[in-house]
Length: 196
Ligand code: GRF
Image (cartoon, rainbow, N blue to C red):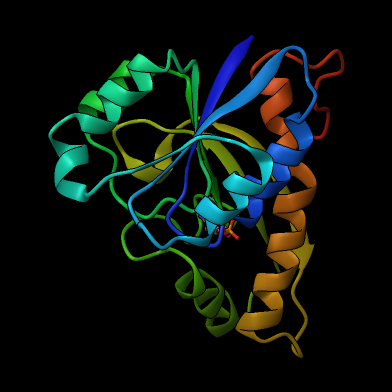
């Protein structure tokens, strides 16, 4: 069984889709949901699926507490799904090419410092872009610059607001993230073909 841990700081709608996707799989399981927020809704979602949870402070993470937990649970892959803290280098190094992030824009556009959540969709609106999308990428020491695994785009119309852009992006995330993870960790018989 391949063991996945999801790190999330907020609502966790992506985490929920991933848990639902792997429920009943004989090849991979979501073995842990870890959060830096004790009141993150993702922890409630985990309970619903009977997935163990773990919470930690930034200080604890920087001191290696999260890494120790992931090692203790023999986690193979780390999935970042709306995780807002900068990952310590030691943690990244412990999962070489085994850590995946989803970014709510078409990287390299709208990546880097300060580009998270609503800031991204507001920047897309302000720029007047005609499309946006999602990027699923490996995590390296330079936050949003790891190898791109998958991108999918959606049109942005003049009528769109940052909120409706966010909804479109979320829909893409929910549709693709679980299956891209499945393909990436090698538990799928068909590989994702529209990687680009
Ligand atoms: C997603 O848009 C993801 O791309 C970003 O944070 C958001 C998390 O949403 N990194 P949710 O908590 O999964 O609903």
